[in-house]
Amino acid sequence: MVRPDFDFVCFASNLRDANSANLTLLTNASPTAPLVVTPLDASSHQLLVSVVNDTDTDPPHSEFMSAWQFWLRAIPDAGTTGTLNATSGSLPDNYVFADLESLGLQSGQIPEDPTTFNALDLTLPDTAAAHIPTAPGKNLALISFQPSSDALGRFGIFAVDRHTLWIDSSNSGGFRSFVNVPIDDGLTRIGDVLVTSVADYNRDGIVDAADYTVWRDSLGSTTALNADGNQNGVIDAGDYGVWKSNFDQTSLGSGAGAAVPEPGTFALWVGRMPCSRCESPPLGPDSFLSNSARPLVVAPPDFLRRAPTQG
Image (cartoon, rainbow, N blue to C red; front, side, top):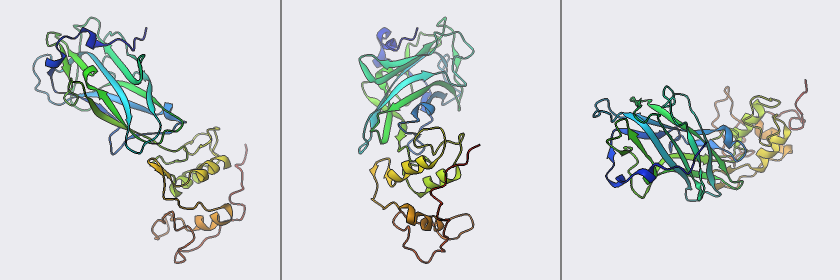
């Protein structure tokens, strides 16, 4: 049975004096490469939490893990709206206890605080242990998140320090902290999640001309669904409408207010978009029809009205 309320800290009497070996808690979502989700597709993008040994010269037992636990909390950066909560955990590839008998991954929201997520596992018997190698280390869990419908912007993923720890194979050393997460009453940022618009089809944090290109190149597809803004399972004219209504929106709020071209002028703008055979630099959002120096290519008048062919 999954026990998200189970907590190693309940059994620890020496947390303040816990030893730190050379194990570091990592995620696959850094400030420069955050996990990018939208309110509609968040469940298909997961945060990978892993552990890596920083050195091959640790003391005896200190690179062998027999139990681990982390608590996570998503906190919005300044300017970010809405909320983001971790909702579930699943076993990743290269799982730390894959070759050992264990309790099994236990994960879930803390009942008293749904904004905090707990995940843990321990070997059975507790004298068994997994060797933690240097990079890429071993994986602990895949964590899914759900943004609120009004969520937009960057969230820091923080480890709750006092409840993020591990146990070495001897158990005589007691609970240990990770190198980058001290055992105290604070929070340590270990990852970043960027919640962006459903119309941000290339997932770069802003709804702009590049997202139109993604829509155009996948029009009619039922498999390449990055541009499925209305989530109906096919890239169609409705997804263009989603893009248009969200144009110039960024992951930190509304954009600079650049005008979205109407269908009557859109073909002219498309003709000015850079391509692999053009040497003209990309246009800014305020330059749709203003730069006469660039070559003009007029698309067929029904360009925006064509529906995907069936069959």
